[in-house]
Length: 222
Image 1: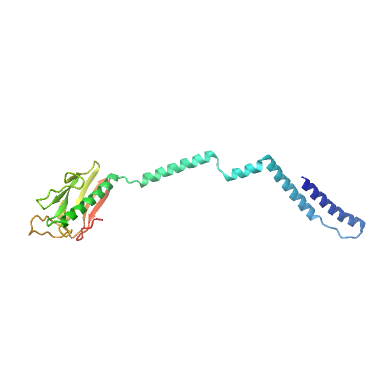
Image 2: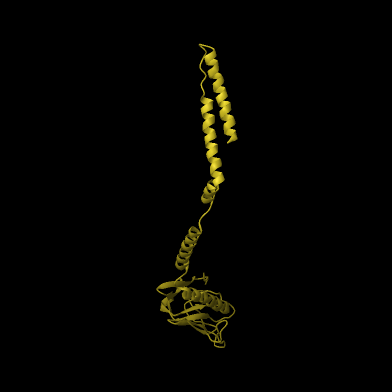
């Protein structure tokens, strides 16, 4: 407030001097007082800012612009939780058992192939609608699945098995080269033709299939 009084009085003195010179010297040029008007306007603005700071309104305005209310934060968290739940539900497969069983079947097929490559007789996997069995043409061997005491694995409820093998067969055979073949070799002089097309086994759950493929000639199981 004192600053305004000093500036205003100084501005008045300047204008007064100009006006006095105009009265004392007839015919003298008139001095405009634009600087006085600008100074007074600036003083009024600064007085309003100072008054608002004293009442706390200026600080409250800044705080309101810089943050959020508790209610806004809670609403945002609830919306984010709902969106995350929807995303997880859609990304989670609806056939988790079929996916897990397909991975297990790939391991069994690779195991049968490795056993065949260490033998002169064929090893393979035979399929039914409810499971599969590890089999071999070597009558001196008792095939057993890894981690089990039996050669047969039964699929869980809700998972169905189907297959598309060579010549309508229900067994995937591997010879001593690890190559898929179309038949069993159970004697030393027996042979079997190689499987010339991919052999597929499909596990279905909730009408969502998972396919396991054995590549021809190489026996690769991706």
